[in-house]
Image (cartoon, rainbow, N blue to C red; front, side, top):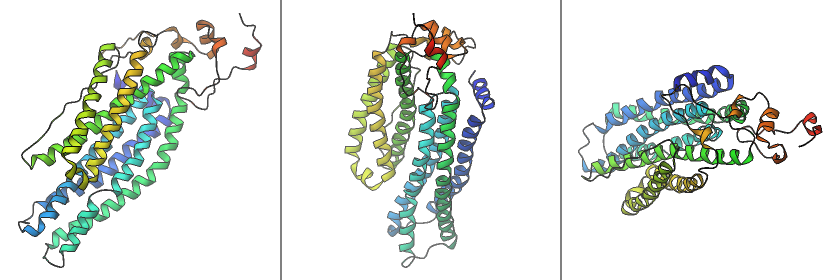
Length: 359
């Protein structure tokens, strides 16, 4: 079901094809640069550096390898976000995937590799380093520069194509849910909640995984399991509401108790702050969506990957806006607002419709 929907969206529009291709190509480039950098760091780290003077260097090398691994996970997650946004026709997810290209660039220029290179350079005057290790250090420096430049070049075309994608399937979403203003507003809230749950998955996983790796060397570890469920019932929304609340308090506690780690490791601090922001936003959106239950949105948001035939309301069968308006009787309630997915299609009533005698 999911693969058939992806194939349909991929073949239907050149913009969807271009957007997914850009995301996939950036992932391939990132993997091609990050995997060698990760292997180089581990190779240098595993060398004979038993001298106490290398203690600070070894600590930074561990953080660099952790950041490389998390960067790879981030790029894979961003591609998944782009695919999910195209399949579900969620413009918020599409724009989020494009926006995270900027975050990729920030990650690349804030990497711990910079301090690691400086630390190693300062030691060259005192201690003799292996020529092979010094060569790998320089290669990693070039790889990081190349990664930052390439990701920066991807930012602008990604945003432009993302904008075209949302305009492309805006009419499909309109046909799906109709022209009811209230339904559109509830649908927007659910789109935001769906996006925040996906962001929760990444930031919660990465922040706790980084902490787990760091504490593994100190004989202590804290684990966490996050569950992401389809928001199609009040009980699930209630669980989603409680889970971020727990994560919010737990993350604050972890940051306070591991402040020395967070203060010296900016990547870990960034991930922890991401968890806090995502948890607060998810709680607020969960409350808002909980209040919207029983108001007519359910028929438009339920989906089941194992079912091929999904019943939809009549608005999905219409070929024009006027047919949907006549069925729902919302002609008099039409307002000139920004549509849910297409900010160019202002959904204005044409001259023929304006001349129609209202009932």
